[in-house]
Structure formats: C-alpha cells, structure tokens
Image 1 (tube, each protein chain N blue to C red):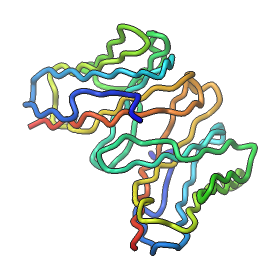
Image 2 (cartoon, rainbow over the protein chains, first blue to last red; image 1 turned 90 degrees about the horizontal axis):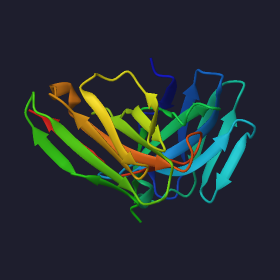
Image 3 (spheres, rainbow over the protein chains, first blue to last red; image 1 turned 120 degrees about the vertical axis):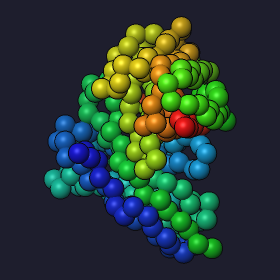
Image 4 (cartoon, rainbow over the protein chains, first blue to last red; image 1 turned 120 degrees about the horizontal axis):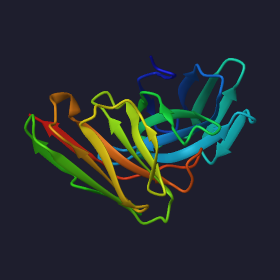
Length: 113
Length: 113
C-alpha cells in the first residue's frame, strides 16, 4: 500500500514549457516533503523541500505547491530544459520519524528540445 | 561532488552466494542508511544507523545484515542471496536522523542469476 502516490508515471514536455508533477499522501502525521531528482546511474539528490506550515516553496525554476487539507502537493518546473530530464521522487516523513522517508514511485520527465 | 562512496558499482552472483557491499561517507554526518531501489524504481529504507547505533530496522529478510565500524562506514552483507534481491542498493547519509537532507551514493546494482 503506497503511502505516497505520484502522477503521472511519465511526462514529456517541450523545452520551455512548464512541467507539473503531482504527489499525494495518506498519513496526516507527515509534515516534511522533499523532492529528489535522480539521473540514470546516479543516486537521488535533493532538489527542493517544503514543510507543512508553508503552502509554497520556490527555488529558481522549481516551485512546490502544497495543499494540506487535500494532502496534495505538486512540483512545477518552469522553462523546462533538456537537462531536467530525470526521475523525480516525492517523499514524506513525520516529526521524530528517525529520518525515515517514504518515497513515491517517481515521475520520469522527458524534456524534448 | 561525490561524498558518499559505494563499492562495487555492479555485482553479479548466483543464488545462495554471500555478497557484501561497502559504503563510506566523507561528510562528517552522524546518520547513515541503506535503501533498496527495485526494478520499478521504488525506494525503500532497509536500515539506518546513528553514530554506529541501529535506529531503523525495517522488515527485511534476516539474510540482510548491516555492519557499522564507525559513523563514516556502513556496510551491507547478504547471506545466501535470492533472485528477489536483484536491485540497486543505495547508501545515504544525513547530518541528523530526523528530516534532514539525504545524500545518496551512486548505488550498487546487484544481479542474482
């Protein structure tokens, strides 16, 4: 039973477009939501993260929108570049959860030039 | 810049053999983890250690055993591998145990024939 769900499984956009990656969760105790980016042959790397006290977090072209009531969040990548082509994982954890992150299955993004 | 080092990169073995994977981090972090990434890219925590103490031990088969000599090293031994153990094993570290950025290594891909 997936506690963190992501959609779509894969996404293709053109260079310059905005890619929207969705994530939802079930556990109301989750209050920390990082997004990790993984390129083939590499380990995941933290891209951006948000805590449940905020409804938006921005870092350059990457923005997380968070809706606590609906237990949903989304990652928006504006002005997508071919170098953004990767798999994006939404993850979640709760306070005092010994750092245990629950990951979604990921969204594989392809940005076409 | 790589700061979590895993060896080997790739290992092929037969059912019933014993394998051992090494992980070293040079970030001075207190907490280290082993994650398993299966063929569907699902990332699942197996173990985490904080200052050489086991703090998370998920429900994994008993043939898996982590080994920590100091807080910079966390190895993983698998006695008598099974076909379902084929996966990428990712080592990670974080400064603290709770809700901190995870820094992942590039992973060890295990193929069990």
